[in-house]
Length: 264
Image (cartoon, rainbow, N blue to C red; front, side):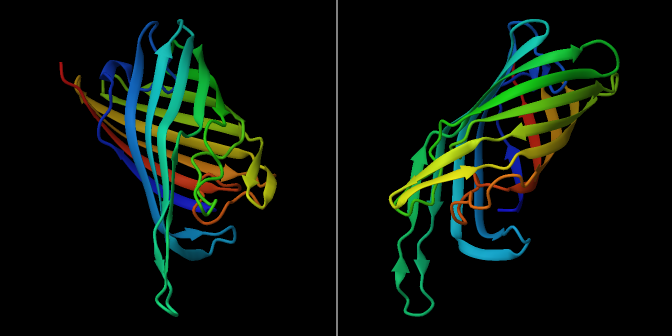
């Protein structure tokens, strides 16, 4: 999938407004931000590497995940993203020639876990700046289902290097964050019944931002975006069919609207 647009609305978050995901700010020592999310991607079309829109059998990916940031020291914050349950499906398909039903497929499992560390470079002044190293662990499965087209992960070990800068417009209840990063992706083996396919994944450049509004101590509304671009320095055969959102040479623009409500 060369280009993909996804919109995610987070309806529930286990957090407090004082300790939302920090951006350029570190988490206070002994405190943190923890979020439980449910994500769904469902598609009947996708963009191929040439930018053409291609029809596919309805394909879906569902993810139940947790995200957390925890203050280890005044400068260091631990970061964890864990997709605890990933479900990939392909719907049944009816032939237009003879009406024959081709049975769909499904595959469930744990996704790829991200584990990282954020270091606060600048904590005083108008701009807070931090640097992060996030390790992408290949804990998911890159070949699954009877069709062998379904995945819960990409099977490669990667390292994301990221800078985040944040600014508070206090006394106005508004903040803004900008980020830039480079994802150094590795290689993976796809163990099909017919044999093993080795894939060298292309690295990725990403930039994004967030604008947040906190009208009260119990409400946060924010808009977050991410633009990810493939460097195209890997293989061209890393996409295991149209169902793969974990494939190679993927570029996309993502928008996320977040609403956090707390009750004391």
